[in-house]
Image (tube, rainbow over the protein chains, first blue to last red):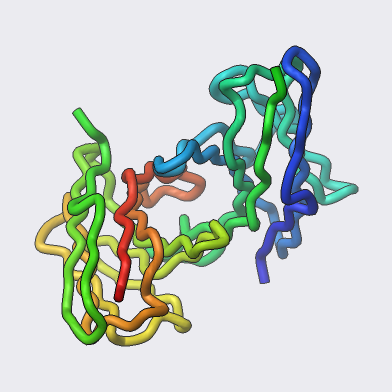
Length: 116
Length: 113
């Protein structure tokens, strides 16, 4: 079965420092991987996705993620954290076929806090 | 214009009641979804639907049913509400083509008393 895991419930980083939010995946076949961000009392916003091609994927708000097949990881990164990046981050993997082709299995989320 | 909208934003109701949550998308997408986010922020797919096929997560009770009057709408009906149904429900949409990212609505916070 397709799944993702986010090993850290909470990540704290100082403003201006680089940040990493970790995600590992378990899939059969080629993975379709996604990162979403959820701000308080809001819906999820798409950040970036990996389907094929370059292992380094660039997304919204200066975020990027590196697909690593040998380590089955898809970590989210940003070179310089902003206080406004504080939010809940979800990694997701595509599951299913047909009408369910884009069904997503979400990780448990990582709360990122950027400290001024 | 809001891409994916849901109404109501908040819904407080008593056990045993029947309620509906409406969802509309103006993105021209052909697939829509309902997710449940529990108090621990865990997100689980409930349904995905396009005009041809409904995919139901087998763990969803049959008290929950999606209704789609057209491609732009997917409403969620819940019968005989239970305390455990309290959660935030999110609607989303995407293109059916593989790898299409999903766009989420703002959520409906359902509280069952």
